Length: 114
Length: 112
Image 1 (cartoon, rainbow over the protein chains, first blue to last red):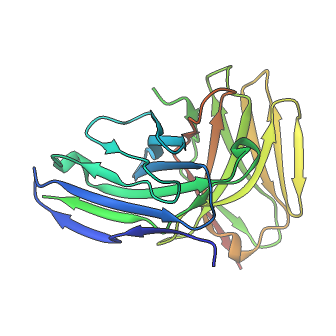
Image 2 (tube, rainbow over the protein chains, first blue to last red):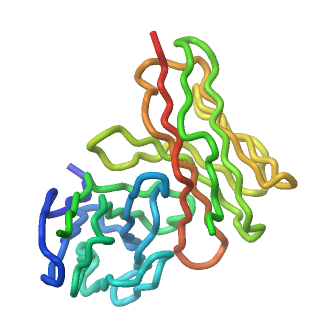
């Protein structure tokens, strides 16, 4: 089944404890992206990657890191999480010609930073 | 500064009637627009898109209208069905790079 998977789905952590949220897609998509969803703010793009080893900042990259060492995986790294990073996170991927193709979203990861 | 705005947080419509969801944008460099639907506890799913070279795009019950001079787009759902109840996000992108800017979302409730 073609899908985008994220792990973990739920995470409660404490301030300053490094964490990684994994994202994997099995559709051989070149484009991948991370978003956070917050009440009243909608979805905001954190980072995106047009292909392996190519990453760029979205609208809200501060406090986050990403890497794209292989096509299928695009992990989101929080080196020192803070309470303002409590949010619902979505990973998405899209095939080549991504502007004319839909993005496929993962199920989301709900992160709480205490 | 919110470059894509959905000023109505919620909308309630009777089944069978038309639902109209609105979206405004400020950046004249945006040239491609999309609508996504989101159910609770799920990721967003793509609904329909429109390029700036068009002013209308239809897909079944869904039609998106684009008014570039007003920097405004709208999604029409006709007829509305209870299964359409969800949060709808509009999104916009420019012709370079991979940035996608979303609006705040509008929660649509279609009542039987």
